[in-house]
Image 1 (spheres, rainbow, N blue to C red):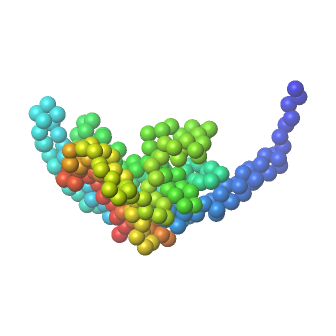
Image 2 (image 1 turned 45 degrees about the vertical axis):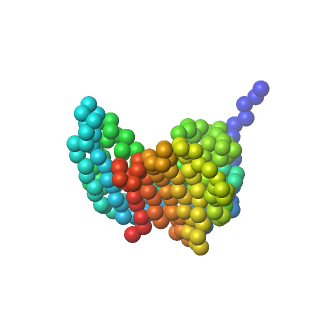
Length: 222
């Protein structure tokens, strides 16, 4: 089969068509709860509370709470037909104390919030999957967690919770959408994560921690 050379003009035309298609998707999939498309960074006040453990002694050897201004980096990763995939990571100035060794490395991962697959009416949090070139929107939705939509999402009235369960719900109040998730074991909360979204602004508050009195971080718009 004869190879057909692609001219520079043809190559530029293909790139222009791809760019026009991407711009069209970006315009059609503007989610009022997500950041404006021109926003790549946002400034927040941050609170960070971590404990340093001696695993052998099973004891806390240091506990530090710090407050500092941080930046949230929002990067467009991939454009799909019905949505856009973004990454979000907190950038600090190095003042926060994380702990030492492997424990500190695990705490540092709190700053990588994850990926957001943003559609016109929904936002999905994506974690723990490899984003390959051939990944589909359906796979993102199937593996993701719905963290924002225009209607509240709670458990049916009368729902009986087991002694150990993972709870997720969405409250929409006016122009604000609040997502909460937590794990409960025999009535004790062991992990908490929450997002608060504001129409026309984006993420206004984020919290993640192992419990309300243990290692945790929180950022909120200043």
